[in-house]
Length: 108
Image 1: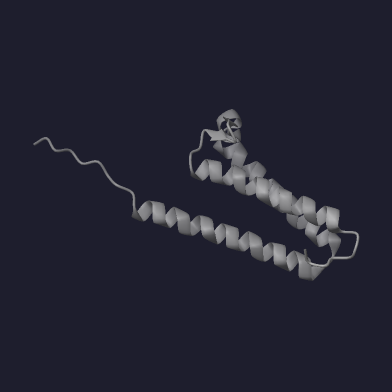
Image 2: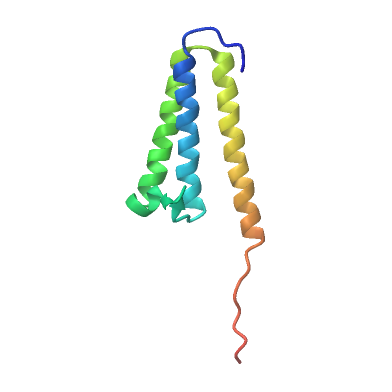
């Protein structure tokens, strides 16, 4: 896709998969999802804290692998993608909060 010719493509592909998995773990916590692809979400099995921490670990490992490849052009691109993903989640959370409804009592 990017005409990358060195031998770091496997680590870069693994880094992308780690980033993707991390976003799924984080999304399920934020969205309070019970299922992921028809199976219990990790947060339902091990809790929110473990899901977030494992997601963070995967992100750290992804960036470690990108640095090990040593191609700053490629890891800058992946780092930018991670920033866009995080920004999108913040925007989505803000929109959910803006559109949240509250229940009020009608009894007097």
